[in-house]
Image (tube, rainbow, N blue to C red; front, side):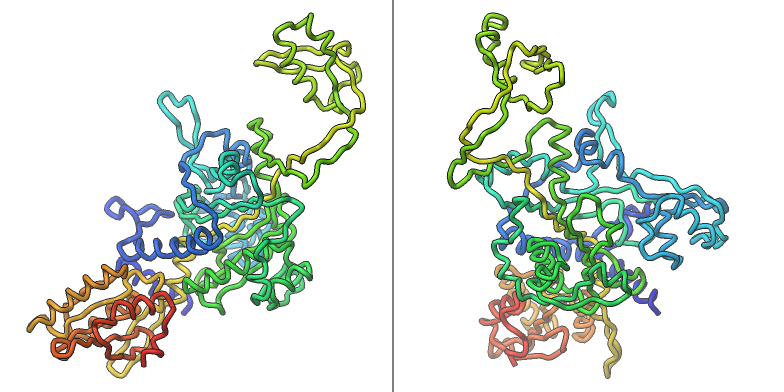
Length: 578
């Protein structure tokens, strides 16, 4: 049964220390979870794998910003006004629900999030309530803000919000980051951290949380130069893409190379295609099943109005269907333009031309002979403000106002001229476009657990196994003494210390029969197990077991640490040892 897989995975996760409900002693609150010892370790390994892709390989430095931001940030970004979900209250049982989710789960509309309130209300009328099962009937659908609001400092004089995404801190730091990258495009910045959304009714476990971890990269590029400098790395990378025309036609995904995707117009530009392929490679690396992964392009009425292109990496869940885990979007200059408008800061990059350009421009030229006697010591600053004025903004009567030192100064037509002047232009100010790959770490982790979960019938019984890639397995090597006597336990502990000194997460276990110990480690995804026996005491060899095939090889203890490192990093396959 589809639901049974979810229940079995979550039972294993709770029982073996991956994930459990938070604050159970006081009654767990939906939308919040605790990561146990194994879950926290696995989550860090996924994050570190992500860093290996984006920070180490791509060269995008990581920053860390506060999770609480002042209100002005989220007014500028549009979150305060528009970060809402469409909600309704069941007239029979009084429960609140997210309207588009109920409509989609009712099978009435696949992309109900694009519907307005009135259309959702009409769809809901014939659907049974998810809780009381009564036909919903006539309801009012209204917007509910997902922002967690708080106060900064005493007296509640300054409003703050828990951030709904990590990106805004990168945008508001743009000027300093630009200087860090020596005022050159393109450059990228990453951040991994907590975000918060006050979800209406989170009933999907780890799929919909009120506090969750995002890993985001913001790549700032020239708006007219969207050819990725390293596109050759992925030009021939092939993967299935479900574009919006195929969705509208009801057909399936088409496998193509990234070069073909850009050339055919399926993907807007090389930057988006590059990060689609990188994301596919990353998800394969951390253990997402390739036959349960798709990349779906947003429909025209689903895509944000400012985005040039947007794709979701979706993982198939037995219970929840296709779940968005990563979003890759070309957000154009929307974010920087919004912050420039609200803050008054430029948020631009000066791009120098290879050679200066001479051209004629219409300029406002101050009359210093008139300004000097009238404004004396302030004349120079006022002249500069006049010269910076856009001629097109001057009203018909010729009078306008400039602000100097916080003072508004009226400028009459007798204080300036508007004329054509020849200027030498060294370059231009450009507002970059932003390419944003945004990863939901919690959803990725759950998808890995479900995709790697297996139950097998063996001759001596059954076993539950997580087929986790060694790079993200919480424990990489388990070490067992065959028996806890005759020096085998002491030797096993020495091996554990050697493995840990080599940077591997190793665990010692001497509890129960050896077969039971293998089963315990299989269930938590430990890829390799070492057994110390009497032969180990005699000839210095140990048995190394592979989790997935259950095959075993004998090798010298002196080679064990290096062999395990090579196995965990993928430089060696277990079959090569045989």
